[in-house]
Length: 536
Image (cartoon, rainbow, N blue to C red; front, top):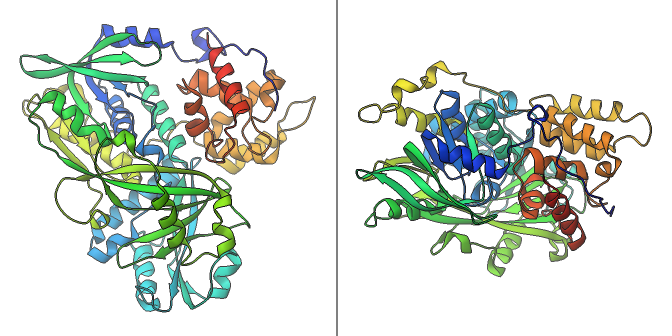
């Protein structure tokens, strides 16, 4: 690994586009009264901040940890219509999900999403027959107006050519459909950037220690910067609680007698090295309602997920031995043993789905979004799917516009007068970006490696050219962070100066893929921490 010399923050004048310092951001937050303070930097809070800023409101967004630091970077990485919802007759919901999926993957963020073919294997004695699944995937594709082809059934032999580790014993047929895939952390970060471009002020690693009240109404929050202990506050006309699994914790700050409003369901995943290339994903029915996924993702294989009720502190969620055994056992229904060796596991993670409160099996619960108003006027938003993150933002904004007395309506542009498919920063054809990165390498010295060019193109879009410039200007930043990963040191410097990265985990787990590849070694971590410390 290259030993980096000191690389100071890139550009110290406003024209450089570097982020303001944390002290400057805290000062900005403390001095103004915002129309909307969003507490929670998961995708629900980020999307709401983005839409609110677009509508003309003065918006602040804070999070106790990193943006997308919890549930929003612990998903199955899918943009999907929800095939299983067809079983419950939720045809309209599937059609709406498809609309949002295709909008994001085709028009809003084609540089961050990619189409993925799914195979549904039908085994002898399985929970569903070939005819039923064939009809299901046809209906599923019809609800997407056949924009991704027609769902159909193929032979086991044809499927095995795309998924070489597919188990073919007792395999009768394979149903085919298509959805989309993403890197959830990168998608969230680009949406934060879009919110800031629209005028929002954001700060991560700033925990709420209390709420501010004026005549019984919530009018802001007290915060503590976890990076240096600085305490400060933010005033706002309206506060939105978008803290995900912690939503009831904040509701109790507003009203100590507030009843629980949500349930939590844990979803665990495993990341493994692939033994052979995969050109399609597997979605294997486990029972009538549950499916286990095997997804080619980031040159790895992502397995999951579990679905069990979680009680206790959300911060304590983790992947247990029982979770690992369950995921591997369920994957073994359709995947050969050599691909499921524990020696291939590079990383595991668990997130918490937020479900509306009430009894029932969590695996059958709909991923609904609920917006409620508390006794002190604080709004709380909880639940929903990654796929519909833009729709959730619009839903919250419509709720704001309809509040009694319409306190914000006169200051905001109605949602129906804003662009429906505003793209995220960096929008570009990733194939074209990768080609340019390969062709336009530095005149002296080696050209960019193809895997690095492809990685930059599909994680930053046209913003990859900014990273390439850094690498061209400083040869040390053109070196790989780890020889077995496509990332280069320029991405670490860029994360520091343009993507709110404060800690090594911010960089290694969410701005890059080094942690999920099992490559966040002590040497790599030390190099990242050194580069972060060079911030001016």
